[in-house]
Image (tube, rainbow, N blue to C red; front, side):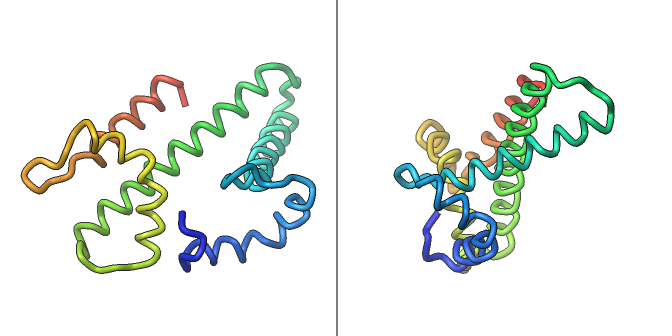
Length: 145
């Protein structure tokens, strides 16, 4: 997403206190901020370790699989929510520019653009969001998330 978008700037300012120490240790790789990714994985790992210890589940390879499933589930659910918000916003105010909706559009484009190449708009209607939601739901079911 565009770094100078107000929504991006808000997220950067909110996460800066937590991510700044990690960014000093872990440099970015190209345009990907590895510090945020490491922090995301660390939070999910800590959550799963706490739940496993509260439930008395021994630490094993099963915990690693659960962590990977949680990461996959969160990513898929995030894209589902972004696409749904984008679709609803396009119904409410289709021609208005809003920096937050532009931010959501930039987040969903990596998923929607390949679908738009295969399935162009039909009669002025863009079915790429519907196809993306069906595929994301299918992926979620296939992976057992």
